[in-house]
Length: 349
Image (tube, rainbow, N blue to C red):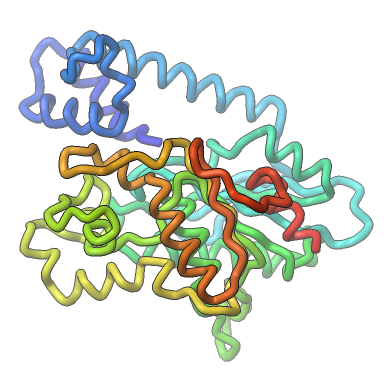
């Protein structure tokens, strides 16, 4: 999820001459990965950072090699734009006699990192066994530019897949999206945003729909508006985490009050696009519904189950299905049992 941060930090840690910004980078690492503090003293030592980085890098390399060895995509790194990150992998259902539905994975990483290679191998297998094709997509990050390039890239990737549906034996009308964190937010945005298709375009890909039939989220955000976070958690002076400034191109605290940024925050937040004809949603959260204070690390509150409960409240009000599940948030009625089974069922309906 944070390969750039990890690679740069481990390089600095390995040098005898410590770079001036090392302490700041260690602080950011501790905020994003509290588990790196092995002795739980609230500080990240050089030794703890090196040990954590090594273990994480080894784990990601092992995961990547296992995935490549056991689940090689039917088509890998299919481009949908000129940038190197505008690409997706796709796994097709072998021997299918009828066009198959598709589940599309959009990775997380705070819009600053992440990779399509983090798609769950177990879920890919489960989809293929159920006769459902699977795709995993990259998109440009905030180091390239601010919102809406991430959302627009994902929409363009989806349109490219639909453009090639006949070639790949896909049912272009049966597509669901899911992801974790940033990928969850993009999936919700596609699920609620008006169709970006341009029927009059000379470009056949641009004529394709960006609408989907369902969205799934893991630790996802229904809003990227700092004002919503402050209201929902009851903390008027809640400060943004490390991801949001780059997401909006914010450079100073004063920028948060500029009309340009306020407008972007409203538009980037999927909850503001919700209408009664939008798609059903299944939201999973890994942390319990605990209290958030001004001292709570942003890594916790930006993935808080309350962000799902607020969306569920809004979706219930317009009569659209929304299931939220967490360690201490158990839905009264969940006919699916898991986000994975929800997505498979929805694309096969």
